[in-house]
Length: 227
Image (cartoon, rainbow, N blue to C red; front, side, top):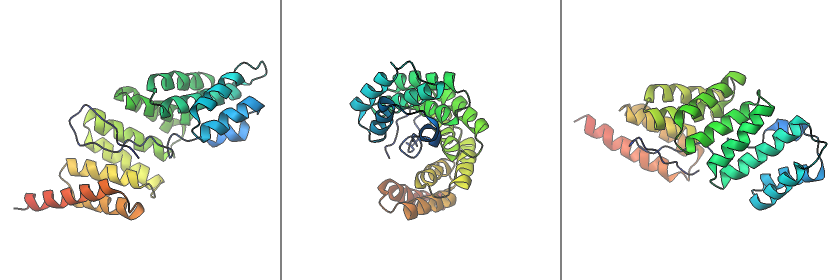
C-alpha cells in the first residue's frame, strides 16, 4: 500500500487508504434497489474500471425511480473512483452527497476522512473519523485512519498510538497498522515496542520491505541510545 506524503517533517507512515478501508460497504450490495446501470456502476467500480464506472453511475442518476439509498450508493462509487484516480477534492464532493443522503453512514465519513487526509486537511480527517467511530465504535479502519491523521497532521504520537491500539484490538491482522504504530513508537524513542510492531508487520506481510528497513533502523537507534 502506498505511503502518503505529509508536511510535518515526520517519518512517512503508510496512509491506510487502500482497498481494505476504501471498500464497498455491505449495505450497498445488500439494500440498493438495482437497475441495470446501477448494477454496472457498482460492478465496474469494484473492478476499478474508472471510466465505465463513471459512465454507468451517471447514467443511473438519470433514472426517476431511484431511492435515497440508490443515490447514496451511486455517489459512494463515484467517490471511490474519484479517490482512486487521485481526484481527492471531487471524491470529497461525492462523499458529502452520500452523507447528506445518509447521515448514519459510518463508511462514508471514514472514506471522506481518508480523502481529507490525502490533501493534508487533517482537522477534517480527524473530525470525520471521529464521527465514523461514534456511529460504529467497532470500525477498526476509522481508528487507524484517525491515528494516521494525529501522527502525520498533528505530530501527536500519544494519541496516534492510542488509536492504533484500538484498531489492532478490533482487527489484529492488519500488518499496516502494526507498521504505523511501530513508526509512532520509534518517534517517541520506544524502540522495544517499535521493533515488536515491525516484527508483527513482517510476520503478517513477509514482503513488506519498508517494515524490515524500519526494524533495522529501530535496532540501530536502540543500540546508539544505549551507548
